[in-house]
Image (tube, rainbow, N blue to C red; front, side, top):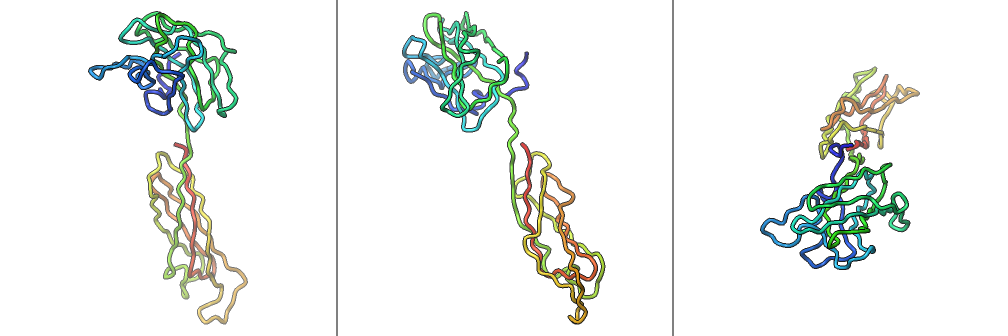
Length: 258
């Protein structure tokens, strides 16, 4: 099974990392991303624990839950040190922790650079997920990656639009169906075409004629969003029959999954 369609969250800095212990400041979680090379910077090419026992871990966490698909693990790039087996723990609420496969040992590495990838039996929904070494060669040292599904988050923009007062909607000579189109530009362009809801928030109308002597029983006015794109839409204000609208205001909400 490939991980090419999933997001490497450690590489893309989509999670925060912390560890149980670090050998020192040059052997920390900042050296732990898969295939990390220190070049001329110095320091270890892996996270290296300060204590050699099964209480050590490296943890990735984020404020928003993620759906994890797989984990990849690799040894230390500059020395013969690697984790030969490990378990995975995770939590959705930060309080109640679960162990993947009831804490069963997952196979790790047997050399410095070969990546061993384990695809979870079922996607793991979690805010935090921890790699816990169980056995190791020479020292607890590893580089790793976590792969997650692409998350669609809603992006919302709101605004207000008015056709103004001096329009055909307030005409004393025109009757019947009339409309005014107002161009609305979103403050930020959406990635995909949003859904737009628009409602009249303020209405000043009359059903009387120009002299005020002929009063009708109905005042019909409405607004709708048309021609919606990622950049904006047209607000269509319209009236029927002899209705006159001299002060209209509409509020809109535009939402897209991105």
